[in-house]
Length: 405
Image (tube, rainbow, N blue to C red; front, side, top):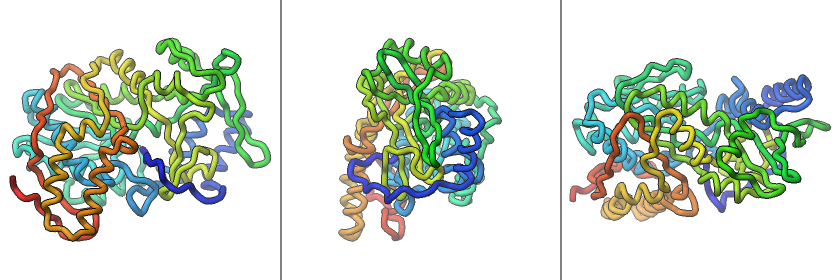
């Protein structure tokens, strides 16, 4: 989930991580001598009661980082137009299920549901929303935030997979937080970076690949990183895609995340790799700083998602940047109409700045968007002015209605 900014302040000096996480990491390393980075990342982020997503994550302006829904509610309002297009392509079925993985604070769910009646009342009537959340900590946050939507929102246990007839699966900044292996090219040979400990410090040591799937990843892409460069490989992406494919019989999968093509991530890899870690709106490239107390993310290989998806029955329908998608959905029209709202100078400036950041090519606008379809027809986006409502400025205040065109 990131968190992309070139001017974020860096965190303060090194501190100890969560005690439960630190103890578990030491136990694993003592028992095995070394662990893969994927194992390190899984413990640091997802250990029950101690991992970052289980105990410490805070989203929003007062938290660790901003995702697009926390940046401005226009994100969900515009994304609702995309979901509406998918619903139309399927023949306007009722019910139509939206299944969101890793819903964070519940902001995107709220924004889509709020926008739906303004996009199309029939679409709003057909819409059913389900959230798949592995973190009990975040699930409680979402349920509190969506308390008035319990008639339309359900929480599905990650292990329960009942296939729905028609729907759309959403994953906004989810895949980048799946555990990754780190692979380095040394003297022309692929080597995996393992995690060990010495004098209470985490160290990386190269070794043979821990799984044949890692070699197959590079073979399938017909790519090798430059000598000395490090690449993050997410083997769990296949498991996640298989889970998503089993959620709907006919419909679409929308993945939004930071990353790029395999060529971008592998052929242009550097010795530092692509990890980014976030805490209190600061960032670092050191995943071993305060394990459990900071987010750890890796760039998403969208070529890999497309190839794996094809083996699971998904066809690639659209790949673009977040900025381009939002511009097509009407963010510029929304900006012009926002300028006409009766807001204070400060509120207007704050809203316009946040709205622009959603499509900023140096930040969130550079995120990639991949739409894959399964037993579903091609869809068409209607490029027209947005006739919707902004449900509240970023600063405290009463909701403000858009002026009608």
